[in-house]
View 1 (cartoon, rainbow, N blue to C red):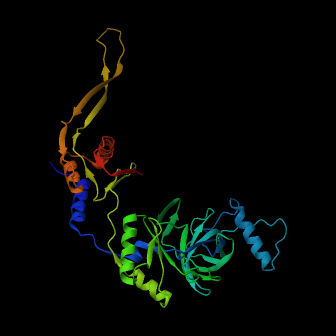
View 2: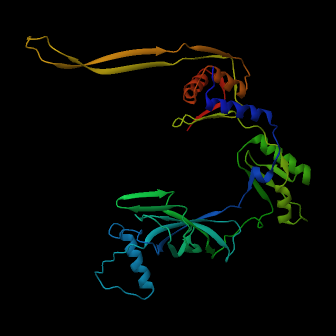
View 3: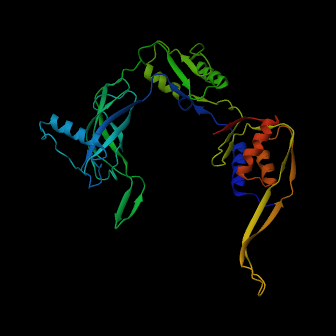
Length: 368
C-alpha cells in the first residue's frame, strides 16, 4: 500500500527525532532572568506625503481633528467651518518594544499601522509621535520615513497588489527619552524563571549551578523560579554571564499530542506511547448521480412531453483493516501503523480521540 505523503513525512521526522540524542542546552536558552524584560509602547500619529492614497477624511473624522489640533499647536488657526478634503494624510497607530536596560538617546524600531481607510502608506513620513507605556508616561519619540514591503497599482477599475500596504516599519525610527528602572542590581539575589515550568528541569538547573559555584548558591522555589545567591566578592554582571552559559540537559517533557481541528494537522512528541489496542480503519462513500430524462408521449395519444429526473445511488465501502499495537509502542511505531492502514491526517483526529477515550493513548490530547 502506498503511504500518504503527509504521514510519510511525519514518520520520517519521528524516526529522526528518536535517533537524535538529547543535547544539553544553556541556562540562557532555558530560563529568563526575573526583571529583565521588554516593555510595550504605543502612540497615535499622522503619516503625511502619501500619493493620494491616504484616509478619506469624510469617513475618518478623527484624521481631520488630529490635523486641526496639530496646526493649532504650530500657530495656524483655520477659519471656522473649513472642510478639509485631504488625500495625502493617514491616521496611524505606532507600536514598539522598549528593550531592557534601554537608555535615553538609544534608537529602537517601530511599526506603523493604518487605523483609517488609507489604501497605502507607501512613501509616507511619520510625524513626531509620542510613545507611551502602560503607566501613560512617554518613553520614546518616533519619526521617520516608512518602509513598506509591498506594492500596488491599478487602472480603469483593475488593480493588483503584492503583500500588505497598510502597515510599515521604521528601522531605528524612535529615540528613547526615559529609562525604565531595573531591580537587577538592587537585590542580593538573582531569580531565574524557566520558560516551561518543570520540577525535574528546575532540579537539574539547581544541581548544575551548585556544582559550578558551590553548594547553596541556587535553590528552587517551585517548578519555575530558581533563586540564585551570587558570591559576595563576585561582579554581578560577570556572574550572570557565566551563569547563563552553563549547560543543562533538560528533562523530557510530558507526552502530548496536538490536534488542529481546522487544518487536520497532528503533532506528537517522542514521549507518546500506547497500551495494547487494536485500530480498525475503513471508508464509506455515497455517490449520487442525477441526470435529466425526457418522457415522450405516443403518437396521437394526446399526451404531453414531461421532463423527469433519474437518480443513481451508489455506496462504496472499503474493506476495514485491523492493526494491533502492543504496549509501549513508540511514536515511530504509532505513525508506521497508521500509515499501514492508510489513515490520512483528517482520519487521525478521530482515531487519536478514540484511542484516548479508550485509555490506550498515554499522552495529553490537546485540540486547538
